[in-house]
Amino acid sequence: MNENKKTGAVPERKDIPDKYKWNLEDIYASIEEWQKSYDSIHERIESLKSYAGKLGEGSNILLAFIKDEEAVSLELGKLYAYANMKSHEDLRETKPMELAGLAESLMVKYSAAIAFFEPEVLALPNEYINDCIKNEHELTRYEFFFRKLLREREHILSHELEVMLANVGELSSVPENAFSLLTDADMKFPDIKDEDGNTTELTEERWYRFSRSKNRNVRRDAFMGIYGTYAEYRNAIAALYAGSVKGDIFYSRARKYKNSLDMALFSDNVSETVYDNVVNTANTYSARLMHRLVALRKKISGLDDFHYYDLSAPISEEPSERIEFDDAVDMALKALAPLGEDYLNSFRKGISERWIDIYENKGKRKGAYSWGSYGTKPYVLLNYDGTLHDVFTLVHEMGHSLHSYYSRANQPQVYSEYTILLAEVASTTNEALLLEYLLKNSTSIENQKWLLNYYYDMVRTTFFRQAMFAEYERETHSYAENGGILTPDYLCGLWEKLNRTYYGPEMVIDPELCAEWARIPHFYTAFYVYKYVTGFTSACAFSSSILNHEEGAVERYLKFLQSGGSDYSLNILRRAGVDLTETAPFESAMKLFESRLNEGVEVWGVNE
Image 1 (cartoon, rainbow, N blue to C red):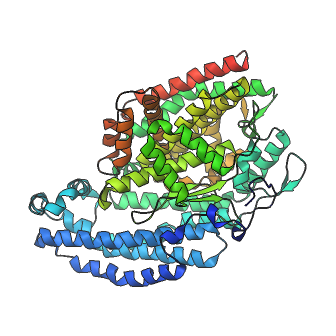
Image 2: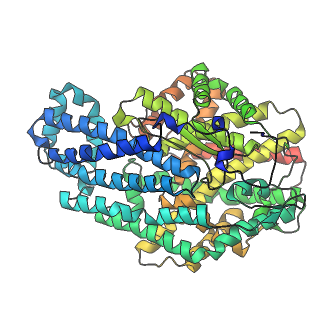
Image 3: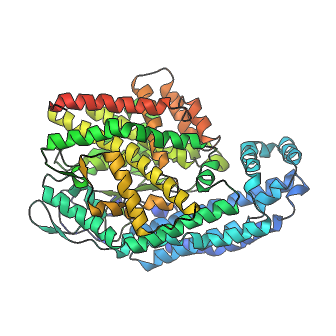
């Protein structure tokens, strides 16, 4: 593939060489091999039901079930990951979509088969569980697992009701699946004129580039094309989102949580104090820092009126040369060098073993992610387009994957997966290290301006924007829980209010922006996005200690990566020196932002 060849057309997948695609054949050699595993696992899932009613008959029975269940879940994880990643290669292909549907149904069947486990264990006396762990050496490693489970006692239902909820699981995934199909496959955006006057296809992946165009007409047309299209679909998407919120409320009430936020925080053993720290910090500092940033950008840009599509406009010369993917890897390795040779070798391993699906193709799932299971390599989906932003995306997603790599290599299966709360820490630490490397090696005032502006965007999108998302989710769920109807008008009105609060009086709120909520896929995993803020905050602390060469900083960080889910997330972070129940880490991140705003005022030489 000639990376230097630029064309307005998005390539077909068959036209991209294999070396730029992830190697899913490491999981299954072919779809036929996947099918064989799928066919054979049904009986193994059914056999798990034979343990129902017997877990109290001795530690040997309890251990036997756990071993059998782990063997089944190991293969099931591979089936599910392969099918979904395969379908994301081209959402127009029906066969992979069929596999993903089969895998989804299989997960429901598996959940129903083991639904007896939690209520049956919770019906047993604590003394029995403690004796089993004491008497059966192999159960010792599951002590924290059982401790977490027993904490869930008041939220676990009877066996019959657990089976019912497991069977409802397939229905509860409909809003998210429908949203994905609508926005990834069916929704079409208009063509626009690029900077050279050429007609080009508008896609979500290309929005990043167009939103940073020097040509304001291109920025505006891209904004109107993307956001205007979502506004046209706001009625359908509002119905999907309302269905997702109703599902959250249904489960929270069925399981006797205080509300849906309480349910979302409970499994991580996170108090609402942490969520409040996120939203309150953003609200406290939005007028002081975000409004200041908007005013600064407006003054530097020399614009009479300032719109959302001007937020990312270049206020310095952006590097225009396309960054070849191999060069991006080299840049990443240099930036991550402070983490040590073992980390760098693991990164190189991911490249050589083709963990990454690199380039955009027609029908490919938009965005980027890291995925896999205990029985697979940690894969990365990218839509790499040669920008410096894409280099940040590379180190971000490899941060996720290397976190998974270290966790799975150092933890037993039961603790191999870290929580989502911890997931954004490693990825954002990588971004912070890359940013520091680039700032340190800047050789001109113009490069320094661009990097500072990139940092401003990072704080805006990773801290304030995600905090705004978190506030939006809290408001919509609370409104619905109190009998409110999530109409398109309500959702658009709330979004407008939040944008005015966060961005301030200097920014014009276009009608199309009020429908931006309809564009956010993370809203279908409720109360997920606040973890970007906690991840950013923790990453600031980690990267600072590593770059300042604090004694034991690298060792503590690598130990954090190796910890997986072996303890509650906040405990793992506390051992690494970050306490998210306190305001100090959040305040520290904001102080850094303020100091870099002051630096920007000096570099650009403007009067505030």
